[in-house]
Length: 270
Image (spheres, helix red, strand yellow):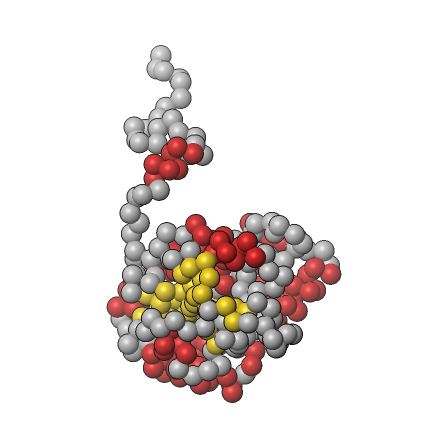
């Protein structure tokens, strides 16, 4: 009779638990493939940009469309006020965090469809999360890809440290896409000039933080921030993306300066 013991396939991870610290350190220096190293991931806030309507959105779409002729971009959309509305209802009804994440994703997806249509003049093309690896081909064809930013954790969303609100939303989604694609930049387009010491809409005396490291920002443990807190920990562990920029999408020319490598708004470095 044959051997009925366990079988294994000869490989370098044979017999490993895949959680051993020494194994993790051994792979730390492995060079990662950068699928689209010339890509700029540009995240358009729902609450900070899209919800302001045509006075803000149309000029920004024109700017993005014209810039896409010189810069390769992936446009990522946020949710905005409708996400806050559905989260409020869901929390009131006791929905689990995973269900809240599913509901929020539908809103940012609606905004992606709107932005795609507004960018159709510049070959705006809708991308679903499952088709993200088609991006190199789309860019080669001269298309301007648009995708919603909510990471597809859905019902498997990580539990938040406190409360119920899903910790991975559209800011973190933009960073995760930039990381897996090996993008050269990740830019968050908001309705303020960058990250302030406090919310400038509440405290006009708040100071703009022009440049800061992830470690310094985590140590500050700020009460409120212009981006999702989870993005700090993702940036800290990222390999391809070494910084994120936060800029004001209500001011024309700011995005162009950011794409050209100028230090505008806030830069958060790993």
